[in-house]
Image (tube, rainbow, N blue to C red):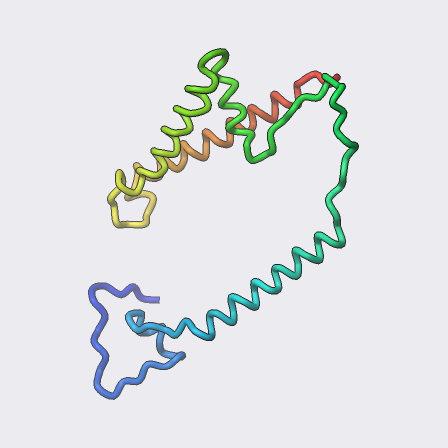
Length: 160
């Protein structure tokens, strides 16, 4: 497949754009309705049917009712909050909520939101976008390390 450089060539007189040759002309629009709408609705209906069937055939297990008189229960976060829970372990005492719960996550997500404005390179190659590549690597590394530290802490927690 050849890469097109520069503007698309103009439509020649008598040239007819059809479903077969529309991909040769990326500047020509394709109809969204009804073809794409029908395809989206079909896939959505099939996925909904699969989810309903799974929820009926494999119900979620229920545990025993909560016992309010016990003090041995240790609350643990869901797996998708492991990295955040571990981050809170780095800020004991009075710094827990203001720094570990507000400031650090706010800076983290602000950096993620600012990456498109900080990295203005139009290329999609990682070798030509070192800033975006380093930021992406550091974000993934921080989340994975925090999740692993949380797993180690939970597995080493004494059971009562």
